[in-house]
Length: 443
Image (cartoon, rainbow, N blue to C red; front, side, top):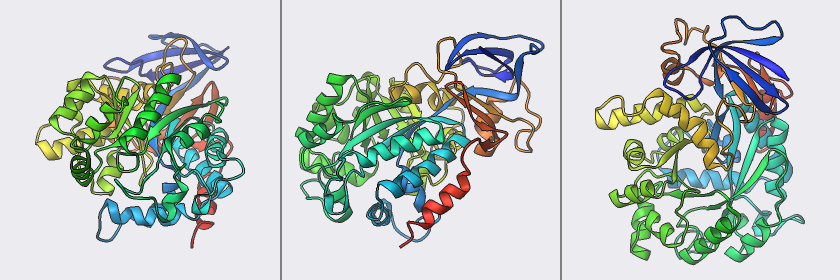
């Protein structure tokens, strides 16, 4: 049993609690008590605001190598996608392990304790399976283990290059040939400590309705989380309506995908009927504002989705930046720009999206809370840096959500193990790992 006295801690309410004593037994929180004026002599003292672990609910780890290489110049999501395909063509299990280890290490430094890795880069060049057909997925699981965070490998079915189009070029590496082939391969993925497996439909562009139904059935039979890119661009909606007479959300609902286990990633351009359907179904909607603005995708209707009953989660997606505080505040600030109205999303609600809801949509419903029985994931944000100087217990949540950045994370514990201490990863030189991995992928 270890004891940790938090100067301030967020226990899920509307404000931070003062003097919180958290006792940890192995990997779980055993007890939580607030209002403890002085730390016990055997307790570790955590100065600042301590939060539950953050969940990055949507990641493509290999996109990290595009940072600074695909942000400038004219174009759109579709032109950016060609840069991404070029990168995907150069990866193998070893280079993917190295890049993902650094990427997940950067997440740990930012307070992320669990990642949802939306994985579609499955096979070798030309689409030929590796000797182990899950070599790329296992590399991602191993990378998360070495970085010290949990992972849900959201293995994505990807069969077409567009509606009615065959895969081409690097896309051939994504395809299993059929939904049945995808299911056979994913069934061979055994869960590992700190890792769980989920399912994904890449998009209605890449998976036709009959195959989406196979994926949805596979996930339902195993009670797996099911994710899909949904209405990321207006062109996706238009092509889906033209081909099927339905929106992407409507098409996925027909396929049996939409349920309380479903996460609509992006949901940037849903129709009014889509919003009502996603809300009434109790789905999750994972917003990725830094990627959505980087790719000029648009601003999703987060307030309307939440009001309809959808549960919001957050992801850093293409990793233009890895900072869940930035993702959280962008949900509110981007909507302010579009609507001219402030205060649609309060700081505690944004923190719930970054913690409890994010973990739940990844199949870790027990995580994302500082409460007895929850995994011992504690993220301490320092309040003495210039960005947060002057913060008090009364405004700590607002200060952290609307002003903190990843560099303010001082300490991260995952399952009772310290992964980040004094702002540095305890086992990885993350900057060196990323530098080496990215330089090794240069054409």
